[in-house]
Amino acid sequence: MLPLYDTIPSRRWPLVNWMLILANVIVFFFEIGLGETLLQRFIFTWGLVPVRLFRDPIHSWHTIFSSMFLHGGWFHLLSNMWILFIFGDNVEDRLGHARYLLFYLLSGVAAALLQAFLMPLSRVPMVGASGAIAGILGAYMILFPYSRIVSLIPFFFFLTTAEIPAVIYLGFWFLSQLYSGLFSLAGAPASGIAWWAHIGGFLFGLLMIGFFAPRPRRVVYYSQDGW
Image (cartoon, rainbow, N blue to C red; front, side, top):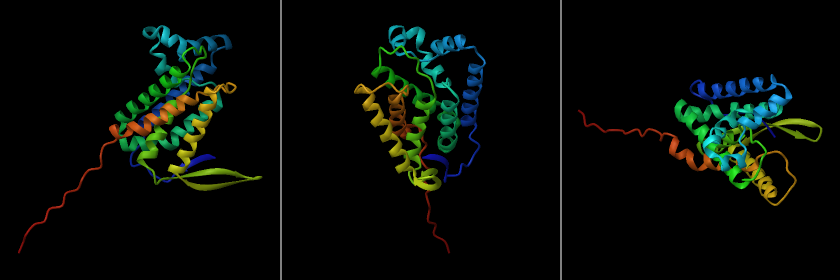
């Protein structure tokens, strides 16, 4: 299922969401401008390497943040930015610019740390915005449960579109990540995907959005006696 758009309009321009997309694109174009040797060194330096993080956290903590803006290829970048484009604007609309940025970054931190804690001896650099974006998806599921996600669905040799309730769409996505994550812990062949980063980010968004989202204003009505 490829999400095309949702049915919740935004009330204001999602400035931070666009800035995050732009930052990821700029960093990626910088990456592809490097030669292969320099690119590998760049990814290893700025990606999150779990074993390095735990052995030398003072000199490695910054990679928790820098790794969120690195991507391993065009598909990795475009798929992440498309999902952020569809779901991020509504969450930013509800949180406001500053709280949205903080929530996005903290989602990425939670995602990266869960993956690192479960794979503490890994020397493979973790890169990508998907953990932070998963936090946005978890928040979206709580904030807009009745939204519908218009998605492109293959049907035999044809493609069709369908409106899928956000709770079902995102719930199915989370269960698929959990299924793959459990298999990765059980010794399944490595896929190169940080499943537990997705799971950690989503759970953070699901559980913590209530502390970030402002409560709807209560309207108080007064009765007035008159002649």
